[in-house]
Length: 323
View: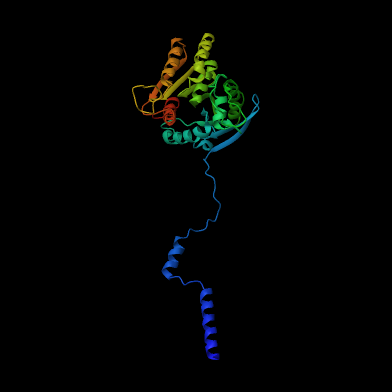
């Protein structure tokens, strides 16, 4: 009996020991698992940074709002301290700034395709959503669409801050760029799309020499029941000249085609027709130093056309050595 008891105890111990050991893993499986396991990262992830760019914050004195100004310097800027550069100012910078920077470096081809330039991105007001900020800052009057809803809870939709925003650019952004960078402030270029194009058009007719060249993409002349045409009429009654070079570009789909079933056509706003009307009224005035061109880009709509606008605009405003 004692021998049987001893055997049972030994058997139980063997079971316990066996259960407490980790299961043996085949050598091939162990090697495979080790190879498949990713190596532990030795450093924390880093943000993606665009080379030769800076961000400065400005407080707009007239509106008590803060804005960030993005600056991209051309390749070789530090190597040529004797050189100054034209400056391109663009609205909707959160989207437009990295896009233009990339297009400029590709199309520019080290100065052969387009001339090197300093890029200045005009961002939205700090604390505002892009939609809220651009509706207010890029529009000329308070006569916006009353059916719009605000995307900022507790804050009503606001339009009509365009003149104040233009003053901020002229009185504060321009001096900042002139002070800190080797900028040729006699070669300033404006670029804007949609509401940004509308803002540029309003600056053109009221203060044409604020910029030397204007790239106006798909201007939203439909805003406020086409109030910009009334403003144009009043401005032309006062302006003896509008010395500027202007390029207006829209997508081929930015018109109405009732017979077409293509959903990319505009359903209610003929933006191409409005732009043609704007150009025709300016040309009818025969301003001696206003040079205005208009173009459409086939197979592009309001949301897709901006990269093509910038490519055409850069080739037009800043032709390179091989132009």
